[in-house]
Amino acid sequence: MAVCAAERKSRISRRTFLKVAGVAGIGFPLYAAEVSRHEISIERYTIHLNGLPESFHGFRIVEVSDFHYGEFTEPYFLREIVRHINRLKPDAVALIGDYVTMGFLPPSTTRSFAAPCAEILSGIECPIRFAVLGNHDSGYAKKSVIEALAAYQLPLLYNSNTPIEREGKRLWFAGTADACSKEINLDEAVPAAARKDGELVILLAHEPDILPRVAPYGVDLMLSGHTHGGQVRLPFLPLIHLPPLGKKYIEGLFRLGPTQLYVNRGVGTVLLPMRFNCPPEITEITLSASPVSKP
Image 1 (cartoon, rainbow, N blue to C red):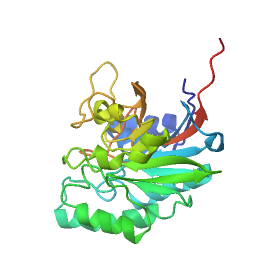
Image 2 (cartoon, rainbow, N blue to C red; image 1 turned 45 degrees about the horizontal axis):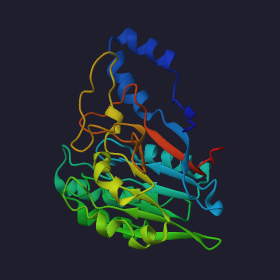
Image 3 (cartoon, one colour; image 1 turned 135 degrees about the vertical axis):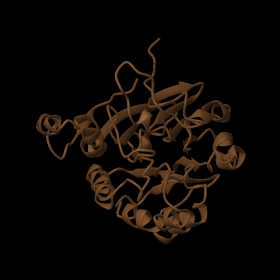
């Protein structure tokens, strides 16, 4: 079972904005671009994991993804995301890719956004921070993004892994390369030592639809983004756009075999600087040992 609560913050009230914008006859696009796109939602989940060591009970992970800095995501908004994360005081932070955007701007401009994005994210105060690349990063900005993450001490998990130790027990964080660019290598990403010793693995992977490939590796929890939750969700209509490898697991919590998956809606936008009925998301995940069933 997962327990969820949302906190939402608006720069101005919906009622006031819609009243003013409605008079002007441009209510929906302005609301989607200026209010809904900046209305941060903090989603809280408790996720139960079989075999979680007692020393990691209550371990809190903040997940955030799809920053898309520069083209639409403003510096002040990304700083606000960082302030929210710092107020939560998590034990670890997972950054799930797409720091820049392959969009309407020249490639050289896109590459130039990598460093200022990483600089703002380096303001995250949590000492345990891990990042993976997204499909936009792995297009024509891969080198720039990797260099920026390294320069600002945001450790990149690129088909690699590292353990966190508490009281002699280990919890592994692993990360894949981008799946859309076909650079993913799960044999390298998922630690063989963890599988051998029965230790738990949390896998950061940008695209959620690789879950069927991940589950046979016995990963306990997979954290993804990529879909933006659909970004613009109009009542009674299908989602307008979902990216490749982001069409099945769109947002929220899923399970396939031994693997639970959480898909974060992201904080940025692509194609249009709009969100509707799909606010930008920061996810706080609290780990808990699975309750023992009574006979």
